Length: 152
Figure 1 (cartoon, rainbow, N blue to C red):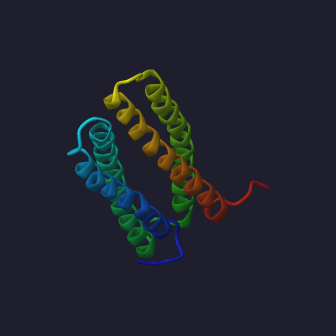
Figure 2 (figure 1 turned 90 degrees about the vertical axis):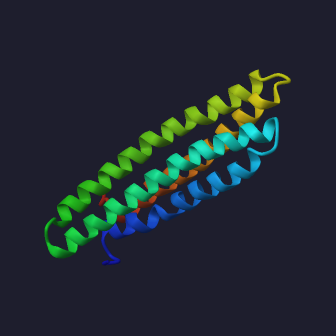
């Protein structure tokens, strides 16, 4: 695969999301064995991690196929530029949603009172939202910097 095109970049850039997702599923499965707070924290990690892993794997597969199409000349750099803009826009929208996840996690922790299960659920949502906010924001900024030229 060519290393100097957007799709190759996308393929490599989604690897940390896949790793986070897989790590969340494994860590969450272990934590889910412990009652109370940690069980519900772990259940959130499993759920969010599975979704993150699936999205990363699907995105990496699509990027690999598009990189091959670009190398074969089936698509051109204009399509790669459009794909970069689309992904950046999706990531920016996701960053906004991540703020809602963080707020929801904090709200749930605050409202939980003595319910350790609810506090664990809220903390699990908070941690996943924080990671996703960092991942989405950093990747959107990197796409902007590397793949989207400034407007004239």
